[in-house]
Image (cartoon, rainbow, N blue to C red; front, side, top):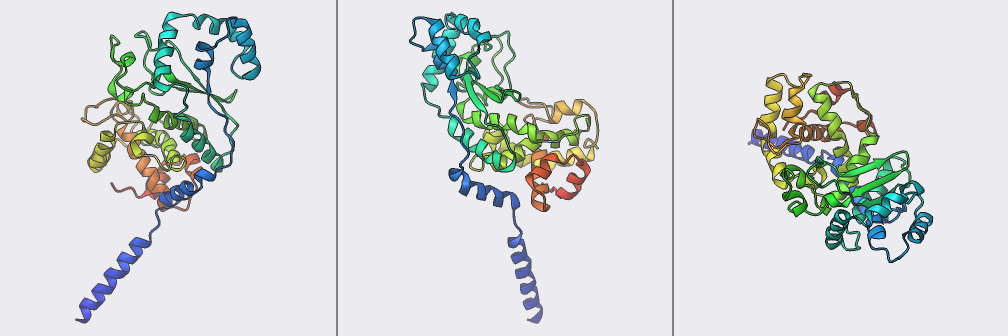
Length: 337
């Protein structure tokens, strides 16, 4: 009986200590969830430039543009006058605008998570007051390669541009009726629910200190994963597939196969290999690779390693994003899928 009592006490202590182990990432996310609505940083409204250009009621374009130049000097510049005047009368541009306007009207349904994300970024890094502008372009035609991220950031002018023609829903005719339809792993991201995560991901890259010349697979996995760890904190209410910019089914596949893929990488000694073919297997976006897995599996594993590293060490998110001692990250993460 005495032995059973000792065993029971031991198991109780083990269980208690296990429960006491703090998930630092979840703790930080929960704190941000509580504070996100009281965030006081002022973020300007998104300028819907396509509405200004294509629905202006001015008969005289010169007068209209002069007004826009005074109201929005950061975007409506003298050098762009002729270009804007020309596209306002272009048939193709007007067709594109009509589709965007039908989809979004004049509502900025995507602006709230962007504003909250920018406000939370400022908790960790000082950032300028970015001007956010939506535009349309005619690059949806077959001659253009569909972008994996249709967000443009001009760090010199502190301007963020959202190309709304690429956010009309994955089954929109613009993407499906091309001679070469947009691949589904790309068009999956072409809806309004992904605008905030794609924008904040692109912006988060600037906070990461990466050893760009290191072409080993593991360093690339970590470099590419760092922005997603930061998005964990600045988008605490969002599901993982939104943050990673993929289908829910891909995330399910990653979790279900992480152990076997990680074992495959280790057993084949890929982790510190600089073989460029490994990028195609584990890093490059694709529908499925030769392993039968969704693209970017290696980046997703890198994300989980960084989560483990953050949870198991007394480090700040700033320190993690700046850390480029990849062996240290690997050893101290204690990643076990």
